[in-house]
Length: 279
Image 1: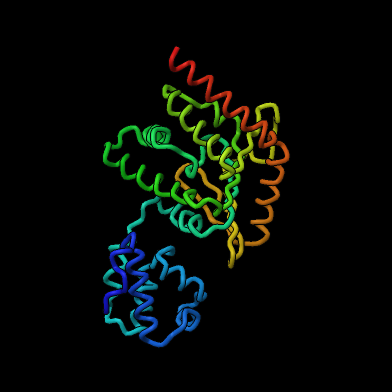
Image 2: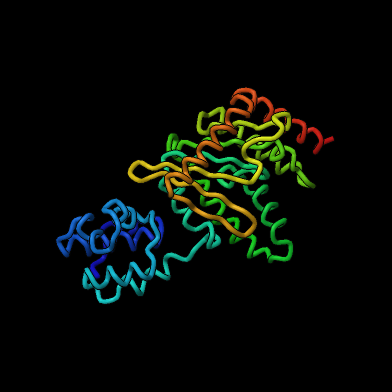
C-alpha cells in the first residue's frame, strides 16, 4: 500500500487506516458512494471510516480487501488498530456519540460519563470493580476520559443532561471528588457548553424511574436511543421506539428544575461538600 499523505499529522492508528482506505479507494477510481454500494453501507459511512470516526470490523475489512484488491492489507491491520476501549455493550453507542450533533441524556444515579472528571470517574470504576488492579482501572479511566474530548469543540455536539437529584447527593467517602465534578458541570453550563437540569426529589414519581436514557441525533442519519443497565445496554434505531424514549425525555425535562435553578442547586451542593471536606 502507498503511504498516505501527511502521515505525521494523524492522531491515531484508526485515522491512519482510514487514510489508507482513502488512498486505495481513489486509486481504484471509486467514489465513497460507489464503494459503499456493494458493502451495503452509505457513502457517508465510508467517509466516516476514512476520517477514523467509525470502527472497521474484520468482516468489512475482508470485503474492502476483495473489492479494492489490496491483498489483505485491511484484514491484517484493522484488528490491531480497533481494539475496543469500551465494554462490548457500549462500543456502538460510544461510536455514535462521536458522530452525534445532539446528545440528550438522563442520568438517575451517576454523573454522565461525558461530564465526569478523573477523580470521580476513578471512584466509580473502583466501586464497580473493587478487586481490579490499578492498571485495569487506569485502562477504564483512559477510555472514559477520551470520551470527554467531545466537549472540546465549542458547539458540537449540543449536550443536554437531566440529572436526578440523587446524582448530586451520592458522595460516599470522597466528597471532594464529587464537589470538583459538580464545579466542572457548573463551569460547562456557565460557558454555554452544556444544558443541565436537575430532577428534584420533590418531583415525586416520574417518567424515568426505570433507568438511564441517552438520545442522539445526527446530520445525515436517523436518531438513536440508548438504554443501559448493569452490564448491559441496547442501542435502538426503530422510529417508534426512539419516539417513545424521546417522549420520556421530554416528560423528564418538564418535571425538572429550570436550567437557572438547576445551576444554583448544583453550585450550592458543591459548596456544601467543599465546606464539609475542609471543616
